[in-house]
Image 1 (tube, helix red, strand yellow):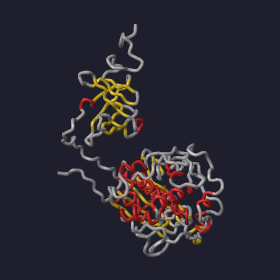
Image 2 (image 1 turned 90 degrees about the vertical axis):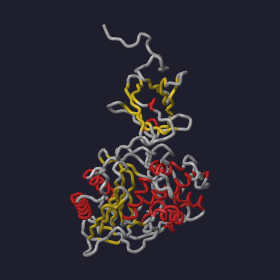
Image 3 (image 1 turned 135 degrees about the vertical axis):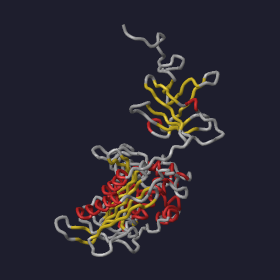
Image 4 (image 1 turned 45 degrees about the vertical axis):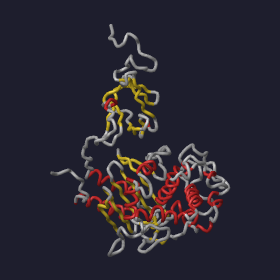
Amino acid sequence: MDDLSEDLELLPATRRALRHRIAVAQSAGRAPSVVAAVLRGGEVVWEGSRTSVEGHGPDGNVQYRIGSITKTFTAVLVMRLRDEGLLSLSDPLEKHLPGTGAGEVSIAQLLAHTGGLAAETPGAWWERTPGALRPELSDVLGDEPFALTPGRRHHYSNPGYTLLGALVEALRGQPWEEALRAEVLEPLGLDRTSGQPRAPHAGGWAVHPWADLMMPEPLEDLGLMAPAGQLWSTTRDLARFADFLLHGDERVLSAESVREMRTPAAPPEPGLADLGYGLGMQLTAQGERRLAGHSGSLPGFVAGLWLSEADDVAAVVLANCTSGLPAATVAAELVGIVADAEPRFPKPWRPFPASEDRVPLELCGPWYWGTSAQVVRLTADGLLELGPLGGSGRTARFRPGPDGTWTGLSGYYAGETLRAVRREDGSVSHLDLASFVFTREPYDAQAPVPGGVDPQGWRGIG
């Protein structure tokens, strides 16, 4: 019997569409080379490349510089420190890394770029000059580290991630890259991701904007700025990393923690199409599809990594040109090509598992918030879902607690407590959720509806 299990192998038409997209990207973007990969269901299902050089093109094992995708790796290290109880995201930096001059900023604000720090370092452009020019944190931050008031708005800050790298080093007692290798790269099997290039690797090129000519870009060691953009990697390694960012890995971070990284922590900037910023992850939309990931660039290289949780699809695009090829845009389009052409099969329905716990059927079914019809459903994973009975409105899922209450996991009710209030005989009178009263009948006079219920009840006119 066919159980509709997912066939990971892509259809020929889908593969051709992917090849065509990167061929157009390489040609129109005038890139010396581009290499890409698509991950679906935890497996790399497609790899492709285009190059201006005759013969063998790059493959998924060739390193490119990934620029600010490095920030997501740094954020993973910080989240590990949080999960181990060594810090709280609400802690001011000063608590763990004193004397920076920017210590009032919280760790969460640094992760989400809401700390108000300047976008770049003072002095010469850090991406194209040796890190030795900035040997101390004071050289990275300068005399005026703040461009905006901390906590007010999203303002992308490269020096902010230098501070996070220094935080990791202070709490781990070892260099940032050593901690990254031991805690993230080795457990995930990312043996082609490194701070310095390892053969085979691409060279970085600048392409003349008005002539078909190229010039090599310098490949600088970024020094203290390494946690913001130093890493080299491959499409195969980044595809594995994307799978981790989708599902977690208990050796590194739980699924719940990587989901937290993908959750908006900073608002989008006005006029931009993105959805804000998470904790070390950019958030954007492709039509109705929500994507999380990161873009990256350094002189000579551009990179993009995007994943769609709903579709369980991710794509990586790397190119060795300073500008011209929109790697992040192409990566998002590759996700869309696969997800739209070959939509994901839903998981088979399964009943609630046998358990000694009492199944809370008395909470299921229709409820009313005032006159708004809502419905509570119990899912096979033991969660409650609350949402409108038809139409649009607030939808949320709730996790059971040991005291009989339920905690919101998403949406407007995230973190809020849902409580079943019982009558003297033990039956459920109503649901209490964040001061809202949900009753079995619209404005049930037998329940403590805020403001009371007209004693004459429902009536017509005339």
